Image 1 (tube, chains in turn orange, green):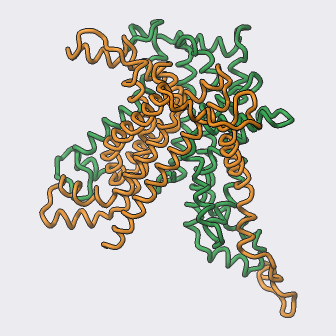
Image 2 (cartoon, each protein chain N blue to C red):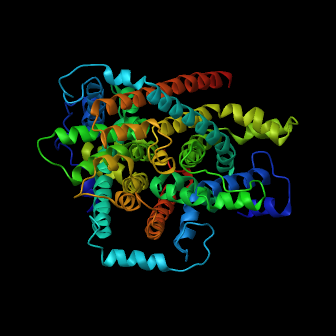
Length: 302
Length: 285
């Protein structure tokens, strides 16, 4: 009985008439639904671009570069520089902290420990940023954990202000974007075969030397990718500066929202948004360029 | 595990390519710092005091009791009850998960199996939402939805969340797809299955763990999303994060900590399940 479905009598109709649809068309057919959603994203960015050269009150018909000129005023320029600086510093710190963690994750043997490590890495990325900011409020507050610890150690005489200034925001930025640095670094280091380390150790390199001269250079593309992701993510960070910075650390993303909610100035918000998009795409392209070159050099040398 | 324990406790020098105790310890401390805000919040939810000093002077379940009371008998002053916000959150997360998966599976198939013009561009486009500034996405979607002649409520959040979750789902499905050889599909076709049936009956079941991982990830992302939702919510549709923010915008109320613990528990369970599904390979990002 089972055979009858598997074999065909001789002389029956040919298996399948050849479909006329080309593979390329079929591929695009399969991609259409997701492209529709991504099309919304593209349309949305074009809309923001159009809005940014509009004028207040006549957003769709007017044309002026006033919103961009406004961004060059000292207050906005300062906010832009602050955003870039915080994103850069947080990317550097996050990569510094992520490198040992990524190395450990790529070399862990025990499945249980690997799961625990991965869960600890994923939590800060996936758990609602709002909740994590509440945790930071408790840690950084005047009577909070960090101040208590510093007072207890005798490092400070009276509680230092950590909330609502750049220190607190920077700590929050590093912590929430940290997983974005760990994941690419861990995957790059997993790609460095253990035999390289064994070879270096056989030739007399110490553990630190093996790490610094073999593992680190070979996983540099992953490290650069991690740094870029953290930078891009933090340059447009919204929740952390909103909650930990109050209104005193005006990062660009917070300003975009402020332009809408109290001020109803759509062109100004859009112009700031365009600056954010351009910054992000520029840094991503640059990183792609650097890691692509680096990868080619690595491949050529192997 | 036994290898690790040996190297940890017997003090045997680790072989090259094994993690030494120093590196392990350092990573442990860094990871502890990374989850410290979440741990702090969990401890604070058991606080018996009414201020935010850490460690709390005493421990009690008073905030859980208060939270329960808010849940069962919402104040008239609350614009929207937590129950409604929770229902909205679950609805939006479930719909986003389903839509994102339904559109990501065929896309992953096309990206892995087919060679076509514009593939590089399609791949680039797929990862665009990962790096696109969320504030701008929120702003732009708000512009679009407000200029539409009809009003979207829940669906505007779903559309936004599907866009945000899509790269993660596509990546997980692509990774699953890559591990399936094209020969199973050819075999199915040779046995008389139509191309579509070969995909639905043979390829998709083999991709199952990747698809499930993508679904879970999409659910977690949607359930925890704040930034874009903050631009798009209105009084009728409010998700749990927005509800919490609107409650704490003036002063931090420790009741929120007990809700937060509940959400963290849900997240942790989902992440743990996600890791089990993905197994040794690690989650694809």
